[in-house]
Structure formats: C-alpha cells, structure tokens
Length: 392
Image (cartoon, rainbow, N blue to C red):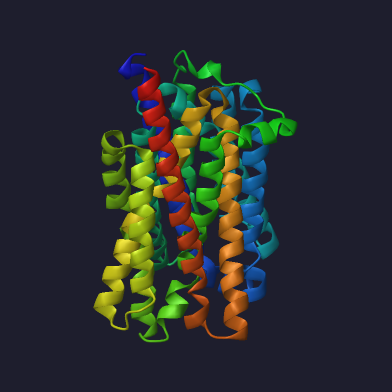
C-alpha cells in the first residue's frame, strides 16, 4: 500500500484523537462556568460526565461490532459533521438541559469515529500497528494537554462558549478533509461481528489478556484522574495539588512517544510488563511522599509509564484478529469503561468509610493485579516462542 495514500488518513485520525482529548479536558475546566451560567449545582453538573461516557460506550460498542457493514468514508464524514453541529449548538443553548443534550450528542457522534478510526489504522498499517496506535494515543495526550489552555483563553476573552465554537470549526474541517479523501484498498477487509460470537472472540488469549489489562490499567488511570488532586490536598495546598494532575497528564506525551518507538524492538509483552512494574512502583511513591517536588516527580513517572499500556495492548489484541479490528476495538473500549467506572467508585466508597489516604491504596490492588497479568503474558509468550522454534 502506497505511503502517500495512507498518510492523509493517518493525519485525519491523529487530528481527531487530539480534538477528542481537547474536548474531554475542556469540559472539566469549564464546569464552574456551566454552573454559573445556568444556575445549577454540583449534583446536576455531575450528571454530564457519566451521560457522555454512557453514550460514547454504547455507540462504540454497536458501531464497532457492525463495522464491516458500514461505508467508512460516509460514516466518518457524517459523524465528524455531527460533532461539529452539536458543538456549534452550544453557542446558543439557553438551558443546562439543552447543553447536556448538545454535549452528549457530540460525544455520541464522536463515538462513531472512535469505533472506526483504529480499525482504519489497523488495516492501513498492519506491520506497524503498535507504533501507529501509540502515535494515535500520543495525539490524544497532546490534545488533552491543550484543552485547559483553550478553555482558559476563552475565559480570558470573557466567553466560555468560544471554546466550543473553535472545536466545532476544527471538527468541521476534518469532515471536509474526509470528503476529499479516497480510502485505500485493504480497509474493506473489515468483517462484522455478532454479539453472540463474543465468547469466541474472548477465547483468543491475546484478546482476553487485552481486555483484562485494560480493566486493571485504566482502573489505575481513572482513579488518578478522579482522586489525585483531592488526595494531594491532605499534604499540599489546593493550587499545588491541582497542578499534580497536569504534571501526570503532560507525562503521557513523552511516555507514548517512547513506547511507540520501543515496542517494535522489544515486543508488546515486555513493554507492558515494564510499564506495569514501573507504574506500580511509581504509584506506591505517589502514595508515600509528602512534599510537592517528590509528588510531582512520582506523578510524572506514573503518567509516563502507565501511558504506554493502552495503545500497546490494543495493538496486541488487534493483531490476533485483524479482520475483526472493529469488534476488538469495541471490546477494548468496553473494558476501559469498566475500569474507569469501577475504580473511582470503589475509592470513593472506601474513602467515605475511612479516609482518602487509605482509600487510594485500592489503586495499588489494581496495579498488583496488572503486574501479575503482565508476568503471565510474558511467560506465555516465551513458551510459545520456544515451541515455535523447536517446531521449526
């Protein structure tokens, strides 16, 4: 497949990933503005994230399983245009309910693209899947880092809605770009999948390991995203504690860049094992130190190491059944969503009955389970390699 045919599609998917990361991080930064503009409290504001997550999860699951039946170019174009229209509607929504409808609609439309973009990359770069997936996640991290900056700039101008006007324009440009592109040959090899065949898909060791790894690793990530600033206020002032999350998030950029280059040399199993062990050590450090500098260093190390996991295990699972890239992507998103829902909730329940300092060690249990899984995966891979060598 000609590199000139693949590159524009790769750039479109990377740009989409960056915009999704930007959109996610601006939402959190603008919550106080939502409350002030529409006169709603924390309870109503707290509904926005789970509603958006549920919409995205359902769309990715349904579309991912039926990816082989969909016209890729048309589906991507309409979905990107849908995101742009929903975000543009934020400019004039007069009530919080309509704001929720607009933002959830944008998230659902983006879910269609999320269900199809990695399968497109998987077919375009079958020999470089892990590296390309790492660049995709790197793009997300860059966008996520830029999100609060865009929100802050809009607030300085005096109108938080400008954030969504800018984002709408960017998604609209992507939709126009897709219209002008022709999908290279090979992407049409994607096959659809019946939900009843899910047990058969999960019986594949690489896919099953991917699903379990994402539940555990995303459990750690989600716990940090949700609770790190609150936990850090037990020994730091509030402004410094909030900065720890930014330090953690910034580390995703170099972490995914390094992982993308290293996975081809060392293999996904060993990258996952190093990430699991290193992230566990860094997590223990985050929960043990009590100074700003040490906490920042530990948070950066944790973000750097755990950031490698998602793209690496996803490429690992996809490589086992490349003709079912869409369904594997759907399973990955479902597993990640499960980890993202369970972990912060468990930490919150434990914190309610004890204290946040003790509750954060729940994340260490997720990390320990992830290390055990990574060790088993490496041992299984080594045995398979030796067996193949003997047979050869």
